[in-house]
Image 1 (cartoon, helix red, strand yellow):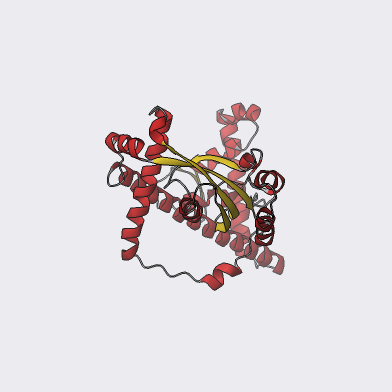
Image 2 (cartoon, rainbow, N blue to C red):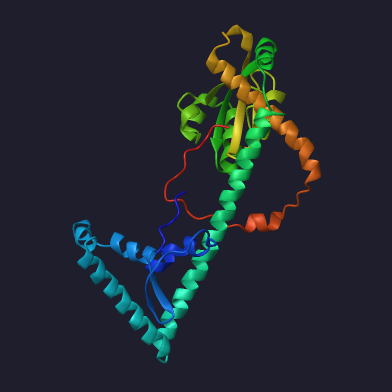
Length: 301
């Protein structure tokens, strides 16, 4: 979801990240001093960037440099006068608005920094896990290929429980699973094929879907199964040993991903004991989601 564009703000607010970074190294050269204020090289060059490219050639000349610096000096003189003059209500209102904008931008910057820091730490540690305890060897991939099987599955996915229950009753009454999948399933990929989701491996699916699928017998249809994607009605098809197909690079990658998922789940089951989690279900249920501008694509499982 793309963030909304922020409203226009004073130019100095765009320098906020620099204001929050401690100064290091040499200080910027000061080109002019006006009372307690200065015009630095950085401020001077920032002004140059803001003028049309065709005018920048003049500003690079000795006369242009002096003219631009004089303009900045005049601005500082006006600033000095403004700071010593009594503030009127309109001044106070503008300054209060600027202070509020600064506070909000600082909050957003801090939150963004925290989020990016968290992502970086998680990403680095996850890589270490994959290269360490979650590492899948070639021997493990081959053993999986030699011993495991995959199961063909079909499903109907809807976002409304009442509709899912009605569809399940209609299947029980004799209506064709395939026709109902084409008519109602929100998983466009499988719906076009009568609900057929292809052959699936244990360990590669979300737990609720996977548990229901692998507990059923061939040809059996589940009741309404709830997963993070919605409400499913699942039908189990035939089993097929993986070893019936060549151990291609694509199949190796699929097996490797499945084994990594299994190892990660086992790792979580162990490590979670060291990090107790307390979930506030009431507050979770009170969360109000924004209305999406574009309907997201539905996934199978």
